Image (cartoon, rainbow, N blue to C red; front, side, top):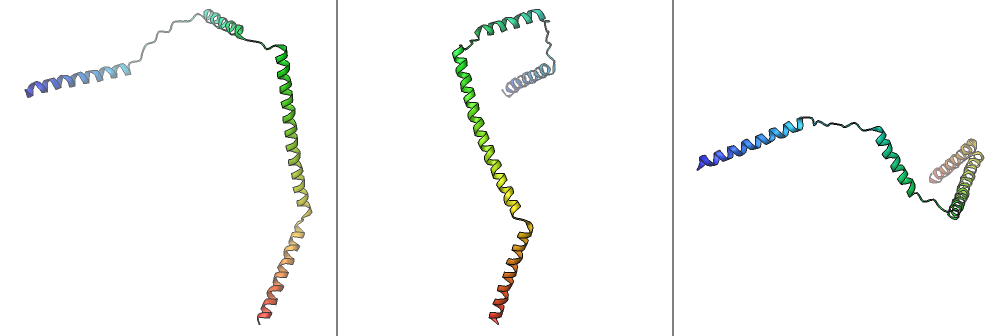
Length: 133
């Protein structure tokens, strides 16, 4: 009985190995594709037939619809133009204010202010040390 089972297992193993070898041969072999040469005139004819079919599907708007859509576009452009102008004006005004504030405060004034505050702090410190003595 053991001999029968081993023989069956050997046959199965041989089949599996044969299938793996066949699959490797198939994957390594380059598939041959035979390309039929296309007639360029037939291809061009099909293209223009398709273009003509799509052209027939186009629906053109009526004059009233075109006028209405044009007015809507012009109104939206005008509203956006005014909004952009307003934002630009506010930003320009803010930058002018910053520039004027910078020009009104010079470096020498800032140094003088610092020096005065330093001398006032020294005077307070001296007064405190004298009071402590």
